[in-house]
Image (cartoon, rainbow, N blue to C red; front, top):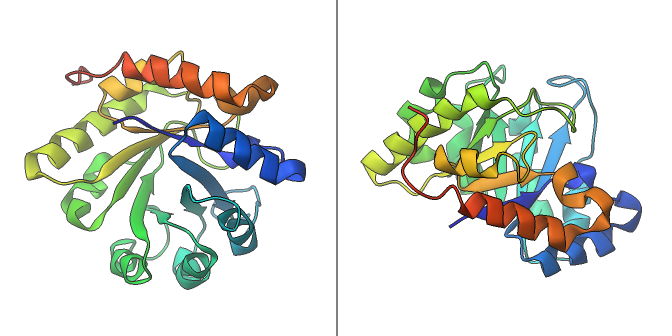
Length: 226
């Protein structure tokens, strides 16, 4: 099953409730929320209060991506705010593996993201403890960047290992995703597509989601990125 996760960094925060209604009507599965601390990445976004505000207005899965140096300090605040998935980076200063159980204990699904230069090998030994593996297809920190196709073999390596072990770990991709590359990422093994500008452009959310989903469906089949 293909899942679509609109990245709300591209949404209009001045009319947040309307943007939520638009993605609901478009039939998406997740809302992707990028939390940046101005340290792990140079940009600065928002905290648990925005997640709480969105949680009060939708039942969609809230997929929270922590681009933070110390995400462990915020596990409970984001759980309390209503986050469903709590994704940390493998490149944080602390050992990310130690946080996975704490994330699940707080009632959230555990996610781990890897930057374009980070090998999938850092995740493979820990897949049983990871509910969502996020492959970044741009450098994290800013929206509107161009997709990096060279990361796709990492998604395939993860998919092969997940399937071999019979796990339910989801593979998500984030960065420059649109109808032009959706089939490729799905064919590589991805099943959750994060998209920002390609979904919210021109205010035609329903049409843009439909185009992305149709393009992604064309990629279903055996992975080719070996």
